[in-house]
Length: 139
Length: 236
Image (cartoon, rainbow over all chains, first blue to last red; front, side, top):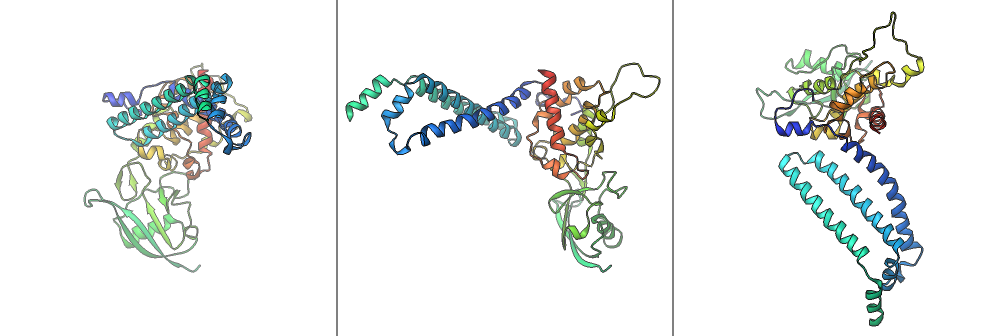
């Protein structure tokens, strides 16, 4: 807008930053990465093996491999950042009232943060030796 | 040529008399080759003189009569009755405040236009004759020189509908015209100003409505993407 800001909220709307440029670039790169990551994920879990034969032991065995952990961490991180940033765009475009917009974003980031931490913990704190052995003992 | 019976439904609103906008219906005779503007003129001149709308050149070049006709932003002077049908629905363009009937307050639109510095900036001493430019360099921004500032693109943009502070496609198109001019030196100034703001260039979500709405066939979305890339390369 051409006129000078008259309030703090107006000033906030007219600040200049490169952050949006960086996010725009990130959305394009992560979008391309996700095509590869998601299809590789589908291949490994649905085509490379019969989905009906997947059991706890198989999952435990896979998650014992560092390569799988790194792959899944990338998938999780890119999917969450790409998806949450897309939702942020929608919130900023369609939630008009500043207060409601702020709290919608707080809830969005909190839920995304919990999901990301839980997912990362599941991937990296998972012990094949302990859990796999326990399951085998049950069988 | 034979005339046909058509019904024109116009969304009318007089803030001094009406609590809210209402649809007024006008059954009229029109030739299929009449333009929608001719039909509106007929209604205003012969049926109801209180109907208000903007028009000037009536030949698709002044950009005064952009309206939402059958759900699409069009110039009333470029659209023929036969291309719409027997019922023509005419509304004011969206996202700008209605002053009366089909007339909206264009000031926010022009504020955004002015904010991108839509003029030639070059501080070098003026050469004895004109500043030369090759036909190839001129071709780069040829499409965006065609803008007539009718606001059809900006008022078709879903981001603009919900956020009237978004600078809008028309302003970016007019920035494009100078950013890609080989003789212009104002690009850094434009990027540091309105285009780089939170409601500037990066608010565009690539919905493509603007490209479909443009009565001058400017590839608006592509022009916006070119400006985004230029800003990216310059900040890299």
